[in-house]
Amino acid sequence: MILGGVVWLLFRLFRSRIFTGDHFQDNAQEIIRNRFARGEINEDEFQYLSEKLKSQ
Image 1 (cartoon, rainbow, N blue to C red):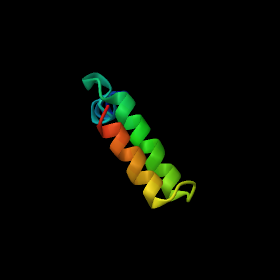
Image 2 (image 1 turned 120 degrees about the vertical axis):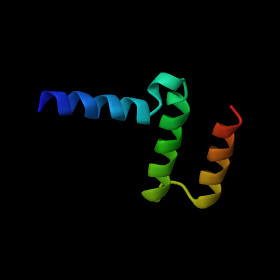
Image 3 (image 1 turned 90 degrees about the vertical axis):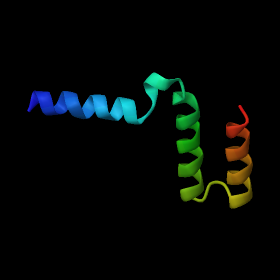
């Protein structure tokens, strides 16, 4: 049970790219995806913010 939890945690860490240095960009992209899904920003704003993140 504990071993399964450790394996799951490692999988999540690698999947979220914490170790690759892309963590900030992934986090920011996730935030704007969530804001778009909740209707806080429209499609134009979503596209603009996504492009800004890609250019950094």
